[in-house]
Length: 341
Image (cartoon, rainbow, N blue to C red; front, side, top):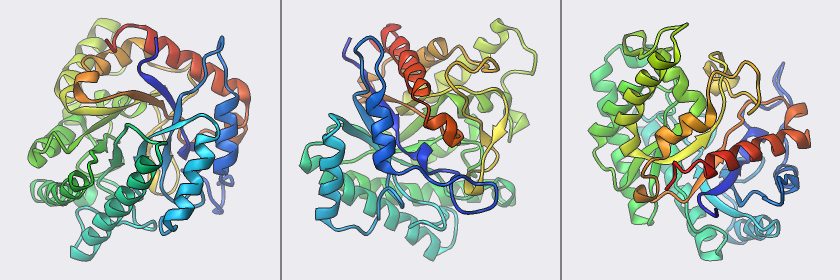
């Protein structure tokens, strides 16, 4: 099978890394590309990468020529670029989607910047599919809870403007369901937000297996829990189906991942779904089976690839070649399971 295309994310070399106490140094783009290119399972290689548009991998203010040089480098590994991550968070280009006018303006600037770089990649030929990923960039849910309805409406208004910008550039946005971001911290609140934006042709959902597992538990919204700790398989998959039936029609981007039921993180991504190795003995998910719930009808929603997300893996794990072979083997199993077609 040649579909879906199998991608590896570059941002695990960046997210949660840094110079602060307890943080490990970032892993450069070239090394992440080399680690990805070295993976091989019975002759199957990764088809491409998904890419975070911020330092140190990318200067968001880089010239067109500099972006084309990055495209050349990526293409030199026989990789396509798929989905891009817009730097919407405070401290990058953007700011909170539920902030004041200045903050929301920065958020939209980040989307414009991402669309510019996407266009250069598209014109180059290294990028032929994929979306631009965003989230609310409002960390934590306490401030959102002060006036949940009004704050969801504020995020929705920002997302509508962002979706218009994306549409004008021939792009689609995907909002990643992750429990640390306000207004997106439960499956129900995520669904409410998507429906309030109401622009499915321009703004959809990105499902990540690790993050959405926390959705089923109602980790940041106990009132929306679909399963209880210690539930049996029948109870779990009943709850899982409830969530995926609601969010799958919106799903236009997908991350294969594993979760052990814990939260983990660092910096602005603190207390979010913990990504585990594909073969982690504490992993709670049957990755292939759970992926099938999300991937039904994927091509009808314009999806052409899936991506592995191993955010916050320690550098020793990221730099171990066997990590990537195990992940690639798991992704091949997802692809070959038949759920895609």
